[in-house]
Image 1 (spheres, rainbow, N blue to C red):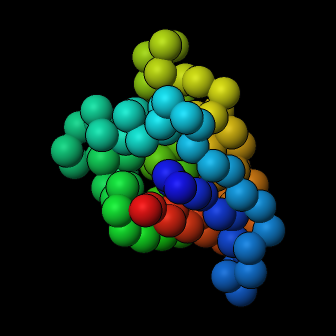
Image 2 (image 1 turned 90 degrees about the vertical axis):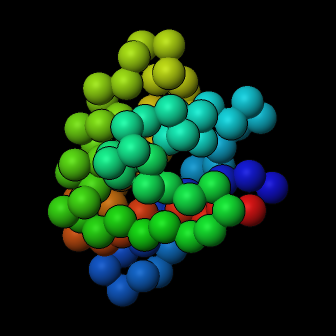
Length: 96
């Protein structure tokens, strides 16, 4: 199935979703990131949850990706993170 990213409100109700593309461009960006980054912390095979504070740092990392890594899917994850922050919620990453 691949990586699914869910926007959750503060009650952990799912209010949006993004799925990685066939090329796994989001996961490739995560796996090529610095080992101490939040991007690298997204687990391909498990679940990862970021709160709104972590998401502000995560957004900075997404925005610093090289232009060729900022695919439509990566930009959709960025918009999902922005939405979660506005809702004081979370991004839930669900791996395979």
